[in-house]
Image 1: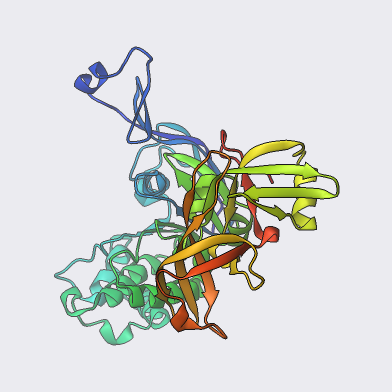
Image 2: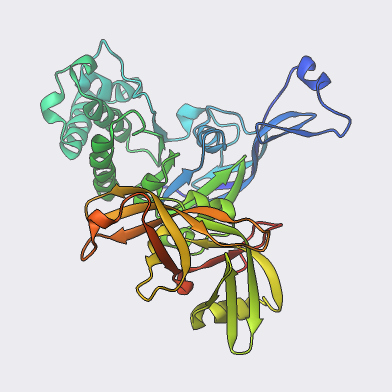
Length: 401
């Protein structure tokens, strides 16, 4: 098993002369949100991460953020442009992929179609000159763990997508690698199979107890699988933390909006005022006195006086007012989700910029709710739970807490 350390790692893809001629006189520009310099397109920028032995790390972010490129640099499939990579204390920048003692599971399974499941799983061991007895023991142990023993004589074309992914995982597992790399392994599966395979990966992790680096664009996978999550955007790390940390204390607007389904509601032109005995948030013309805990956190962070802020409130913290107070809203779409409803609402009220309407989502439990009344066009009053509010600087987009 092994620690993995990345220090100031950067990946630059060179650009040809015709692209260089398009650059302006400033020396660098933005294209598809990635930095372009004289050296080329910077896909991963100043990536620093220490992964502990047996830790499960998830790299998550939108398409093009650099997460798969980072994984491929760890695997040796992409050259590191700048920075250092260490696996188990050894410098790995110039070490061939086959000598890094890692195993990788790809999005497209990458199984040999002419080989049986057994032969697919045994292939890498044959290349390493294991004896027949050792190969058989390793393959059957992996098949037992992954519950694919009845499939050993089949070929990939006779397997379902979930079964193929199990085989791909088994082929990587038989090598007993120091580091297990997984690049969006569930993205080709339907929703039901993804849920099942997430559970399988959690079980597998407990059984083989090695270091995992997992890449996904699906934040639900990230939240359910990772010991820690690395959230990326445009080649930069935005935040590293446990699932609970990044959900409860997002560092900036991007993380706050990316983590959580449905995403956090934002009130971009709100006012935060420090008053005697606490703080008040003015949102769409309504005043909300903040909970003591939130006020204490703002005071500790040095937030004082009066200032414009972006307020974030998760849908589950938007509640229907029972006393007729709060923000006026009208339902545009009501989604029945069984034990809860997702209400898409247009809320009225003037914010500090003069805007009159904002669209938000509220999640309300159906227990005790007049579900039939929650239809398009219905007017409601909404309150916001102040103990769960998030505050961001409108210029830097960084959290104030």
